Image 1 (cartoon, chains in turn yellow, blue):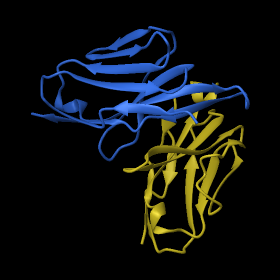
Image 2 (cartoon, rainbow over the protein chains, first blue to last red):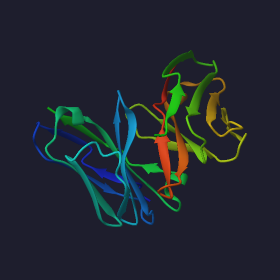
Image 3 (cartoon, each protein chain N blue to C red):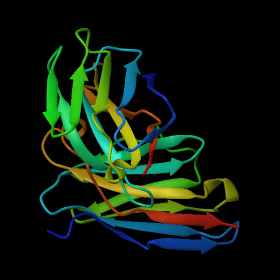
Image 4 (cartoon, helix red, strand yellow):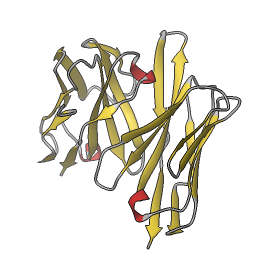
Length: 115
Length: 115
């Protein structure tokens, strides 16, 4: 299995631009999580999906952030417009079965720098 | 909301010394997970503890779950340079209102091992 796949691995953009992060979960996993990691705030859960349906988006910072999961093998996290404070590593993770109670498999992350 | 506190934030040890990181939750947990993140890498699942007072071992790593299921610890005996990284605990709690499970990561303990 290829594991969780994320793209791009690195993204440098200017403030105000739209950023789209992509994730392909492990095949057969029906839970997908988006996290943001910074030195100051640690690892924060932004949103998670079960069977492509958003279950909890209370971690999404503000309206500039949106996430979609159009099918079981693809999800996007979009930031529009981006701001320098959005600079962070964004991880996607997937799990099977009981969601948060199960092992989460993380992707390699997307390192986002907003100038 | 649920708080998961982890201490210490940083730990520097001489190779061969022991290391312990502690995790405390403000609420009773359903279970707790531990992850390791190598520098520049992504979190990787180590273990899950479910039962009150549970103790599990993985070679030089010993994981404990408190009797009240509100705290946990990870102890590494005779550290090696390969143990370098950040160790995260993640508390899982059932949200009775939403009927779903919430997972909250601690901020992690960054371990440095001096050869």
